[in-house]
Image 1 (cartoon, rainbow, N blue to C red):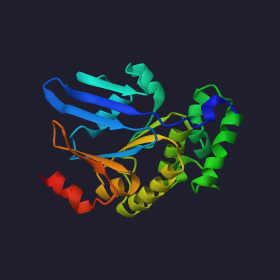
Image 2: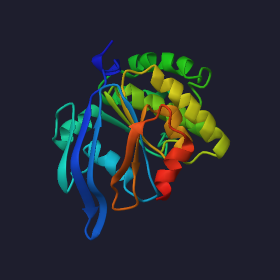
Image 3: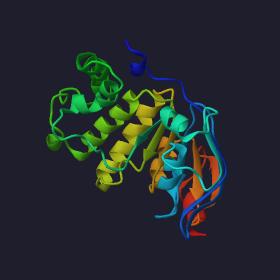
Length: 241
């Protein structure tokens, strides 16, 4: 099987004294975080505080105004991008491709033949509860199913770091809760380093082993802790300060 189809081991992330903004707008202020290999970190904070900006910086889509970021020891933006797979808020599925072809797209883009890419993606449909929907058009899938396909596409990119930017924000509350539980189970079986940005404190505590809470913009880290033993009220108390 081509190397692009193999899940790589998790890669550590190091964020050192990062500040960032856009012209006069200060977004992040002296943020430092370390994510160990295979660890799952949730980042929560008020709307507009810079959570998505932080993911973009990790992924190498932007460079911080000051401070440094490395992924697997690599600081150059193109090298960070090569080590990360970003799942945005919107699923961005191509409407003219089947669910299977959407999921397999990173492999095709990496030069894997379409038939072999489909073959590599197919077991994940069974594993993640999408069996029978491989050839369904995205418009015929529920919102939760679309997000599962988008997650499979992220996995099949074969990167050591998964960056999940509020992947279930557009779903209704019941589906979002179901998908949060599904994601926690899905990540348990993956040897990846994952950073999840979310507004949902319950989702953060359920899905990740560690949590970082950001203040209002310009964001600082006001809490970084293991999720074991933490309650929703513990985190909400910090957010209300």
